[in-house]
Length: 198
Image (cartoon, rainbow, N blue to C red):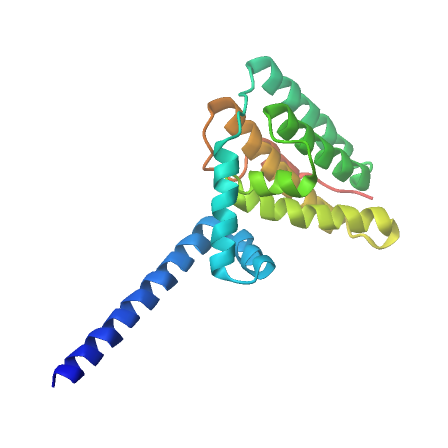
């Protein structure tokens, strides 16, 4: 009888531990979305992905990000509007300009300038969903660069919207010092409604 009770306790404890691990995994998936799944695949296991996330969070916490003043915010917003306006005439060039402006804003804020992957790792902490879109946009931009004749204007428009989402998030965060909760600003909503004619 005592053995049966001990076995039952061990089974219940195992179920509780497995449930806690699954809950933690789902919580991280909810917080980091596809970026977490990509990290699990890249690192080889959820435990290794958790260690990498912890490393990224520590590195992000050590950054000294500078807020943007009103004039700087206005200048970056104006530059974005110019890039957006150029999309209709040359979508591929506008994608290149959008990526360059996102990177320039990040560098100006104080994100390290070593390499693009380090930048994305650090941006993935406050801007998880937008970074996933940025990665997808970068793939579309590279395809448009390598094979412009077979690049869909619709794909490029969607990629531009993804650049806009990250840019808007970063600009919002830069003014308040907090991570924004919304995913689109008026600029990116304008992008989604712009007519693309080629």
